Image (tube, rainbow, N blue to C red):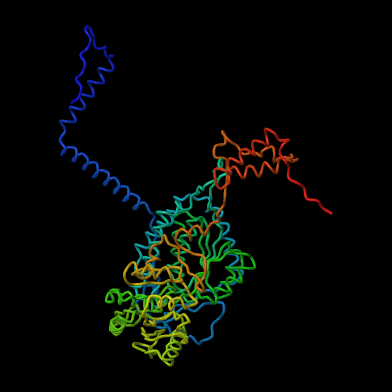
Length: 629
């Protein structure tokens, strides 16, 4: 029991409370009484109303912001809008004027016109204009840069059919493939830059270390200037917008040399970019498109670009690197790939079949990070092959526009189907089994059928060479160690995929020599735009996309200043001022020992030695000078 309270002494009077205290007590009592009288349902109702009001305000703000994004209209020409063309047919063997680029539909071989092939002088002039525009744009706010990206995003959403139609005509890909590879990837990229780009380009504060504890160090991301990009033809819209959006958001100008095999669609893309720059109030020369042959590409590298991004073959990538070496221009090389797709015996084979079809045959197999080598565990090999062959047998191939439904389009470059046929014939002659396709069609257009090979092995050309076409090479295996060795037996190392139990698949991924890995999916690392894109070995080096790619478009500038200048300013201590006193060396070693010693004993020793330098400098032995002859 609690002890009884002692009685108050006789004559005790309770101290008087001040009027303010009495008033406060009365107020608290009234508030408490009011709170007790409020029902929980009323509180819940008030909170619900507040939540609804906040949601409505957010919706109104979002609608207002969206409606205030400038709209751009880029009408299609009659040829761009047509489903069926009646223009003359293009002859790939005809002599070509070096000053122009002939354009044609690879699915029907109908001509689309000509585009100028720019000279070195013209490219140099374009780069100089870019330098002038960049000086203005470098001073732009992140808000203005986001405005430009929002204009492009709005256009992409409103003009999806037009974008896909133009790229389908120029490359032979299906409209649906255009949504997957041109629209979704570009919109994901723009969204990421709008939402997170500023955060990763703001000055980043770093730790000062021990001796410089009174400093405030940081990294500032300074735009490189003019970015030169050389991009391929397989995804014309995205390959252009990908470097453009990141470069301009980082404060750069950019000059993009497009492939001669995608120069027709580049004219439409150029009109889009010009309209977007104007709508956002950006300099007209901030983004420029170069068309031409190898001479124009070399000029982008050598005529003043401050950094170069090259996406293409390993052979050409080496030439780009050699050309850039003369001016010490930094380069990003995203080169060839021969990605392995590993299917374990605990994978869901039925669902994997459709993903494998996409990995091998999307865009008629013309993907740098497409699946080329399919390593399938022998326990599920028959089921996988049966599913793939059955699906391929039902695939319809044809032109993407005006010729009925299709599941796969055509190739883009003349001569590529013949090269693919050589690889297939070589593999079959050396023991591989041809399960589907594998024969050049006798139809008009640059077509090659979806092809499945079983039993591909070392010694065949297709084991080592990048196909860049619609061929699925299937190889069986028995153990995890075996498949890792097989997958790594390749000069390329761009992407990879592993299907199976999560933990087991992750363990295999960790051992694959690749710049990117997808677990139980294909190419999703590129959908995650916060991740960098690039490879190892002959697939190149450095990265575009993601945080690393965005910051790679800037110079990292290290800055240091006093953290609290009114309290502590840096100055050279007297023992290190010229002329050096006798204690200068001992002072330095004592300072190092006191601050940087590996434990308390060293630090105490350094402190005592440092104190001796000032208290009894005569007892400090100076560093001995070496005798010279």
